[in-house]
Image 1 (cartoon, rainbow, N blue to C red):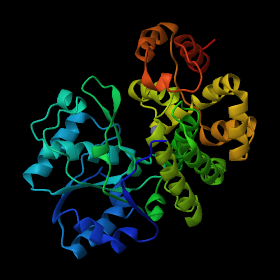
Image 2 (image 1 turned 90 degrees about the vertical axis):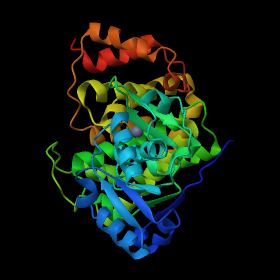
Image 3 (image 1 turned 135 degrees about the horizontal axis):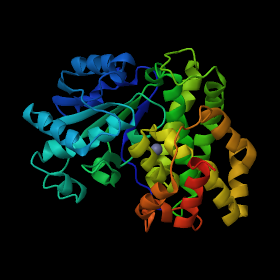
Image 4 (image 1 turned 30 degrees about the vertical axis):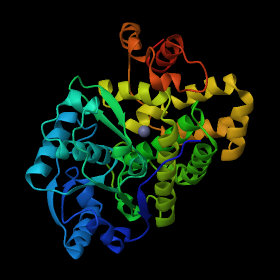
Length: 379
Ligand SMILES: [Zn+2]
């Protein structure tokens, strides 16, 4: 095994205010990195403001994070943080804001760094210390060394480095209660994708498998409940959708999923999912999870004994687990139509791809062509 996770994580009601001293320990001034809405609507920004005020930490706010954040925006936010004398970076939000905050910490310490230098890790100075506050149950970015950003060519790439770990992370699941049904399901099914891809990664070990199994077991009931209500893709705010213990289970499942992929990385569903997000704007969780049933079919056949052990541990057989993904989480379907020519043009990006090779089975370009064709090309 090779296990390392240096982030101090606090979860539970009012954990940010209760542990404000952990923020003060990072410095007397910070840059808050967030999007326009969720941090405010969820109450997380209020809690952070109370905690910072109480601890005597000054803050400047950069709220320009968008979904699938571009590296260039992180560089801009990094310069903003540097100009304002921030001593640490505090990210608030879902995966986009947390991943962006990690990159902003790099740029704040290296304001003249360009995108190539960022990805090449030509970081002359160590990133500023990072604190993260999660407002969705899905990414698990709070506890990973990974940041997934969009480059100047509009491609999503992940960057991994021990220097990208937060020093401290907070997860008060009350802040996830304002997530709409589609957001809850898209983020929630990302937990299943993380846990499943991690379990069927070549790098899985006893620790990561334990995280994967527990993540799926904790997430299953809340996702069933969320996916069985009258669903619509309309942005419906409904904090009665799940009760507080269910939100807590789902949030803690997202942390376990993050811990699982932190050891193993993800497999082909995530990387092929990036293409759906870049090209069709499909939300990250749905974009990845749409490939999970195909992945399960492949890994079930590759090593039936290993797969049988997985289903036994998660307490669902193969059909039940696929039903949770397809009939509850992906219930609205994904409206994407591709041509054979488009698929041929996209395929080379998965040649020698690390996430494809990470899958505990042999997955060829032919397999990916077959999967994309069966899902998205009209017969
Ligand atoms: Zn993901």
